[in-house]
Image (cartoon, rainbow, N blue to C red; front, side, top):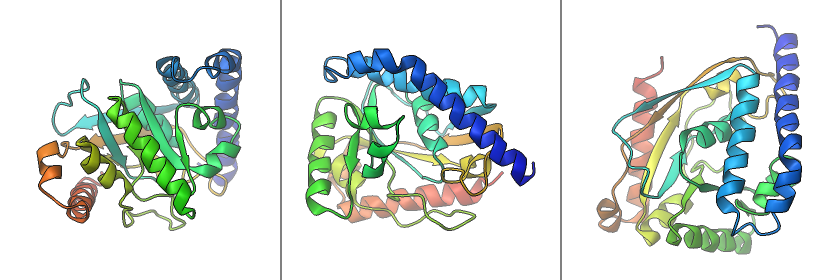
Length: 246
C-alpha cells in the first residue's frame, strides 16, 4: 500500500474513532460525573470505542497465550509500545476493568482526555511530584483489586523500525509493593499497521499479533529486588520477540 493510501486510511481510522467517541459522548459525560461509581461502565465504553473503530478500519487482533490466564486476579500488565493501536490491543485483550497509566499529553487528546480525567492515570515523567502522585494512584487501584496497564518503555521511541527499549522501574515497583502479578505482553506488529500516531507513515488494515506471556508470580516478586524483576521481564519479552518474528 503506497503512502497516499496509507495516509487516507489513517484519516479514515481516526474518523471512525472520533465517530464512535461522539456517539458515546453524551453517556460518557453523565458517567464522568461519578467515575468511581461508574468505573466499570466507563471501561466498557472505552473498550467499545477502541475495538469497534479498529474493526471498522479493517484492523483485527490475534492473541496467543503462553499459558491460560486467570482473569479473576488483577495484574500489572506490561506491553511493549510502538503504536497508538496498542491501546485497542489492551482493551480487546483484557476482560476485566483496568486503568492505563500514560503520558500527560493524553489529556489534550479529545478522545482520551475524558478517560484520563476519570479512570486512567496521567503522568508527567519529567515532574517528580507528578510521577509520585501517579504511583500512589496506581497503588490505590491495585489495592482495590483492579488491574493497571503500564508501558514499561515509557514512550514510543523515534527509532524505526522500532525495537524493545530499556524499561522504566515504575510497573515493577508497583507490582512488588502491592504483591500483584506482572503480565508481560508482546505486541508483535502493530507498528507495521500504524507506527506511533501514523502521522508520518499512515496506516493500513490487517491483523495485529499479540502474545501474552506467563505471568511473573507474586512470590517471585517478593523474593527478588525491583531491578532484577525489571531485567527478567525485559529478557523474557526480548527473547520472545526475537524468536517469534513471523
